[in-house]
Structures are given as C-alpha cells and as structure tokens.
Amino acid sequence: MTTDPSERAQEPPQDPTDEAVQDEPNILVPRRRPIQERSRKKFQALLSSAREVLVEVGFDSFTCEEVASRAGVPIGTLYQFFANKYVLVCELDRQDAHGVIEEVERFAQKIPALDWPELLNDFLDHLADLWLRDPSRRAVWLATQATPATRATAAVNEREIARMIASVLAPLMPATERERRAFMAEVLVHVAYSMLNFSVSAGHVAPGHASADPGDDGGVSGGASTGSAGGEDIHDATVTELKRMMTAYLWLAEKEAQSD
Image (cartoon, rainbow, N blue to C red; front, side, top):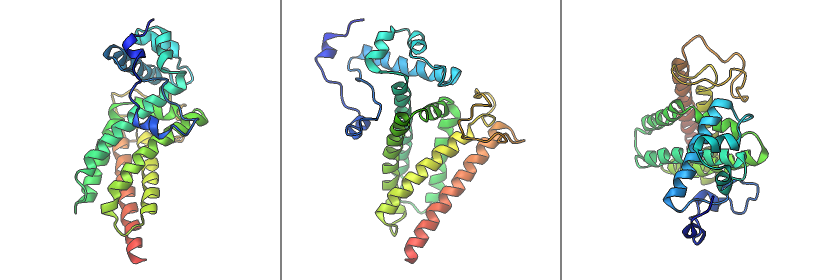
C-alpha cells in the first residue's frame, strides 16, 4: 500500500509523551503518527481492533495479523505505525492514560475547595466508571506487564499522570514538602490503578460485562477473590475502600507535615 506524498513530506506532530521519552531508548512508541485524515482513521481502526482482540483472546494469543485483519487494512499498514504487538499495547495504555489525565484536569478546576474529600470521591467515581464501562482497560494494563520495555513504558504513562496529581495536591497540602507530594502522587496513581483493575478483575466484573479467564488474573487478584456478593457490589465496595484509603492517606500526611 502506498503512502500519500503529502504525508511523506511532513513530519508527524510529536506526541507530548513521545517527547518525554526521547532519552529513554527502551520506551515503546509508534514508528510514526498519522497526518492525513485517511491515515488517522486507519490508525484509530487498528487501535480499536487491537482492544477488541486483546479482550477476546488475551495478550498471549494476540497477533498483529489478527488486528490488521479485523481493522480491514493490510498488515504492512499496521507495521508502518507499530513495530510489533508490544508497541501496540503500549499505545493503548497511552490512550488510557490520556483519558485519566482528562479526568484529572476536570478535577483540578474545582480545587482548592473546602469540600475536597467529596470532590475526590466524585473524581474516583468517574475513574471507576471508566474501568467498569471499558473492560479493555484491565486487559491493556495486564498486557503492559509482559516485558521490561512494556512495563517501563507504562511507568512513563503513570508518571505523566502523577505529575498532574502532584500539582493538584499542592493547594490541598500546603504544609507538605514538594518532593513528598510528588512521591505521594506516584503512590496514589499506582494504588488507584491496582485497585481499579482489582475491582473489575475475574469474578468481580459487573453483570453484563465480559469476564476474563478466571485463571488469568495476572497476579491482580488471588484465587479466593470471588466474594458472595454480585460483581457490581464487589466493584462498588472496592471503590469505596479506595476512597477511604486515599482520603485518609492525604489527611494524615498533611497533618504530620503541619506538626513538624
């Protein structure tokens, strides 16, 4: 398949995340990003198909050939953008991270406020809904644990979120040192991702949502994780615990900083 001359003549716009990882050679990014509308549609079709395949067959059976076939494009077109399936899943993780960043930006517009615990709860409800509505988020997260390079790339995406969280924490925790807020933000992102993925893990998904193989929990949940309550109840209970953990963590850290 040929590439439009206008595409070859232009350099694709740099993704902010790509710029952040230029000096990290092990970070996985697309070979190029599309310029023309037709190429953008193919790029998005490949990512959408990749999500479908990943949810249906898991990462071990995930192939670029199946993704290209489902997207209705030649395999050569896929390889113009993605070197292999590891780059594909990392781009999906980058998409998911940008969705979280959009929620953080909305949350940041309401801060500072006296009722910040309530705002934090609303923010976590929005994030939890993202995970509940889109089972591919957990599948993508598990796939990024496959190799050192995919884990390193996912860590870059999480750090991008953590930097924004740290800026949001500043007016809420004025007595806490900046370096500690930055570290706390990374802890919060890691805990939130782990808990949200746990909330929709095998045996925990809400009724009507596809479940992963019960034996393939990726280390997120134990063999005895399935409770007596329904999937939706367990999801809600997990999110409630996450809210308690985060609120208590932030409150205690600021209280300790004020007493120093």
